[in-house]
Length: 147
Image 1 (tube, rainbow, N blue to C red):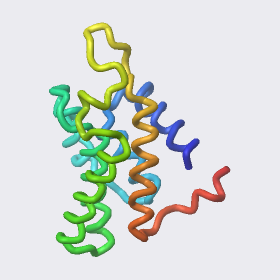
Image 2: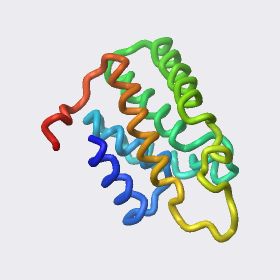
Image 3: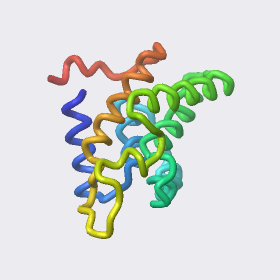
Image 4: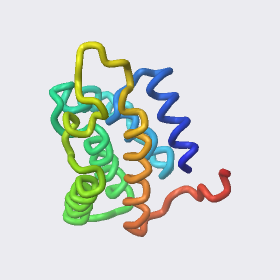
């Protein structure tokens, strides 16, 4: 599963040049075999730190969007979904130290930044999100067979 995430993130970043929020949603939707409408993917085009404003991390935003979709598919209540989102944000902040793009980005921001500086953070964030959702006792693909 970790190798899948690493390869898929690299492909989405370098071949399709999409942001962290959309990358998180796409990877999680594939890992949990849950379709996401194209319009939803489009809606996340500006969710990389609030359109580059350096606010909430797109990995958090993309995961929260995915949790909303996935929990709905599973028949969870809105209260259960809201609680799962709150708990995810809290756990992410405890693990990574912040929810803000500005604080999470490896070297901050400058005009000379190379593209996709957060690739490693993205892999770690998606792995974290995957494990978080699994720990909610929800079904996922059996990645044990994919060595």
